[in-house]
Amino acid sequence: MSTVLIIGAGGVGGVVTHKCVLNRVTFTKIVLASRRLESCEKIQKQLPTGAIEIAQVDADNVQETADLIKKVGADIVINVALPYQDLSIMDACTKAGVDYLDTANYEHPDVAKFEYKEQWARHEQFKKANIMALLGSGFDPGVTNVFCAYAQKHYFDEIHTIDILDCNDGDHGYPFATNFNPEINLREVSAKGRYWENGTWIETDPMQIHMSWDYPEVGPKESYLLYHEEMESLVQHIKGLKRIRFFMTFGESYLMHMKALENVGMLGIEAVEHKGQKIVPIEFLKTLLPDPASLGPRTKGKTNIGIVAEGIKDSQPKKIYIYQVSDHEKCYAEVQSQAVSYTTGVPAMIGAKLLLEGKWRGKGVFNMEEFDPDPFMDELNTQGLPWQIKEL
Ligand code: NDP
Image 1 (cartoon, rainbow, N blue to C red):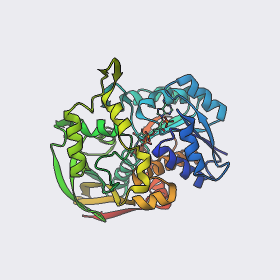
Image 2: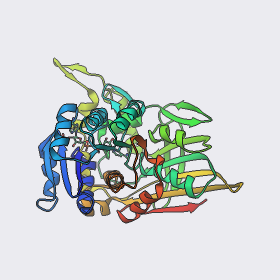
Image 3: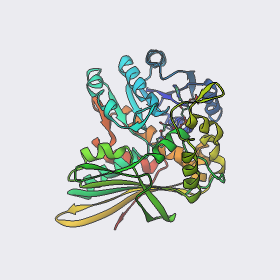
Image 4: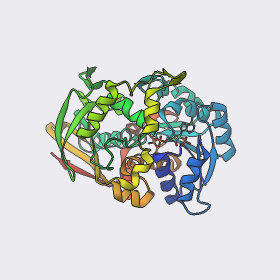
């Protein structure tokens, strides 16, 4: 008997809830909570009557969240609200004494910077409370970390370079829209690029480094170097690593709109005065853009996310590509969400499942690659995210 409390009834929250319902043997009671009850009701209506319970919570409020965790008797909290809520939900979990899982690392609403520092700093707090936090159990971070751990375990004595390659070839028919929360997405993409080589972080201008990569089942796509959070933990846990980079594909139209919005100040995160009212430009932009949840029924095409690892096995050079292809329309048919939410929500459910089944256990705060990748890789194949390996 396990109770899961899912916090955040957005695009990803919807997928996690659907997938927990499909894994009823593990998640015997499912509670979905969010800032607005109507967001939970929307998801509840997609499911059989009585499948889930819903609740309202302001996850910025530690005490309120801890009270809800205790009231519903949660064994684990899946945080799929926004990265701004990570620390308050983690603190609520230690107060209530239950395990924690998220899919994105903490960001301060006023500083466009994301890093694990403040979440890792809670390691002792979690250890003392005899509970565990699993950080970044989405696709990237998440599955990409597990792919790296799998490559390290089964294919290499030493991995020297890793390129994480993220392609979304979906077409939603709008000239400009973001596939997940616009604020989070645009802050990430418009930031300076960064990669790690020989022990140091090297900063680049936004979109400065790019290459064409031929993604299986999609084709060649221009891919741009960005900073991405999983690199921060992978450089600590992958043996012999000399370089790690992250690339993401963007279409012409997306880049052109983003540049124009940036040039006119619409990506600003500081409040400006407008007719006597304070407005944060990027928050206002979010109001104007299509709701990512509404893209599901319109999006066609595929995603392909994977890693290319190069290194040494038995003194011989080796290079492998592990990747996963998802189809937006198939995802929508299954859980009424497009592939970006789907590929994040499924790994969140799998992470929680492995914790509850005792297959991934620890006391403290952990990243995905610190655990045995095999049970996670098996679950990916059976829960809707089958993967492939190619020797290059
Ligand atoms: P959405 O904006 O669609 O959903 C976020 C939800 O969080 C909303 O439903 C919102 O509530 C809720 N929320 C916001 N603030 C609070 C609060 N204070 N208290 C309670 N609930 C709150 O985002 P997504 O579903 O697209 O993304 C969810 C998370 O997944 C994000 O952290 C994102 O960064 C992460 N992500 C991770 C990826 C990965 O691969 N690792 C990829 C994509 C996303 P309401 O609707 O009730 O107002």
